[in-house]
Amino acid sequence: MAAEIDVRAVSAFSSLAEGAITSLRETPTTESVENFLRAILPKIKECEQTKSKQVKIEVELETVVRTNESKTKVLQNSRDKALAESSKVRVELQTTGKDSSQEERIICD
Image (cartoon, rainbow, N blue to C red; front, side, top):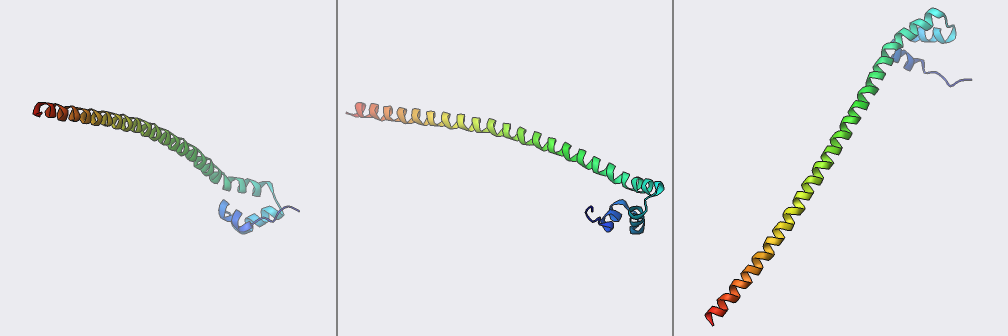
């Protein structure tokens, strides 16, 4: 026998009375099946719209993530260039400072 059907859940989902669901289950008629299908059709459309929105949001999220990853890489490269430039300038200043102090010693001697 098939799995037990939760009549209360089906009733809540379809907005049909539990008695109508039980009747549909026990003695289905063309009319009762059509009524059931009409009752669940809006829920089916709602589920489709929700899935569509979910896919759209997932695509938007992926786009935002990739964009931010690209921006992060650009900023990291800028930072690395700035650090390299500052290190270069620091070395030049230290070298210039040593040369100046050596010149002062030579002049003073």
